[in-house]
Image (cartoon, rainbow over all chains, first blue to last red; front, side, top):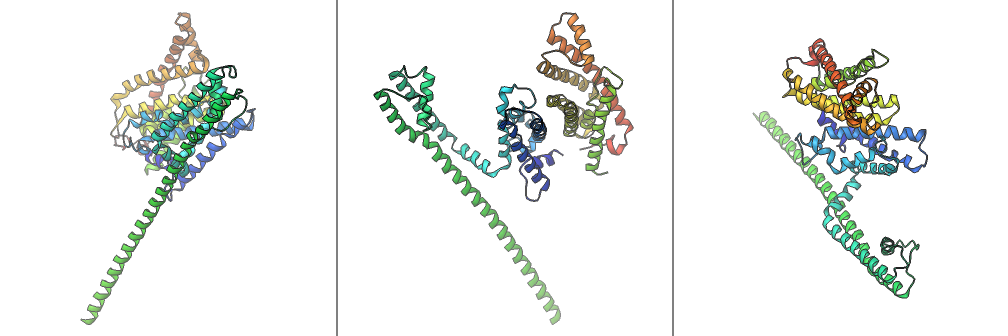
Length: 268
Length: 190
């Protein structure tokens, strides 16, 4: 029973209608469950939507838990998978996204419900590719992130040291550095002296390059994943084709030998 | 009888057992000092497998959450899950049932479910038992100056002891009176 449950909750294989229907149900439920977040008041229909969607998503959590030894590649066939599942990243995210609706976390944690969008990672090929792209480049992205943080920190330090009266605290200087370097630039905090403006100009020019690096890395990795998936699909198609060709050849040989046997019989 | 049919019949019966015995033991029934709302969960876990008990327990908690209009009740699924796993794992090995494991299983059930229920009650109500019989024993413990949380545990523990004892008797009864085609008495089931 648990093996069948694992097949249903995982992304549907070709021909598995029940699993395919389940994938659609959970994907839609995850999206619909975030509708109440768009409204300030939660009453009537919105409460009912939240209640129904949380029940369905909780069931999905339980079904994945009970069949994790079949789902997981690393813990396949091991009973310890049942103990490991609750602390896996996606399971933790699923649980955190459900707790506010179960009344176990305060109203301030309502925003955690938006993590239900991660349910789509299980079923969406695009999301899976993005995840793989991030995973593949995590070391490079980590280094770039450290450089970006260091750059923001140094810019904020330089500005705060030269214009301490412009910023209420160092945190405001960090806020300015982040909005300026990411080109968001709200304009609520800005340098007023000429030297401060010069620091801002220099750090913005170099900062654009630092902030733009992750986008390029992720895009390149994402395109590689798409190419890889296409090649894999093409290879599967070729395998099917070559297999079909072989079957045809064997059939032709059998028919030819059967025909030859009949001719020999007629001759006799 | 096919395996699918057997599973469906036993699980449906288990869901009815959960609901039926819960109503029987409740204030509107015989007002007994126990819940009996996981009799079917334990039965399904022992007769079929732990996963079957988990699903039966979920249906039960889902129904209670819907009828009481409180999504928070679904967290008590943690208790049902513990019962399904403990009964299914401790009472079965290699597809066979081991009756001599019944006492240690009952002891483990009492301890684990009392702890989980107490923690959930503390989280929900701040440590005050909210059911009539648990509150009765809670007040006795408070009278002994045991403190709020220990009294909550005491009230929960006493009711769990009654609950597990009564459930064990009912599960054994159903095990013997139901047809062999459903329970596969004496046979290896997996």
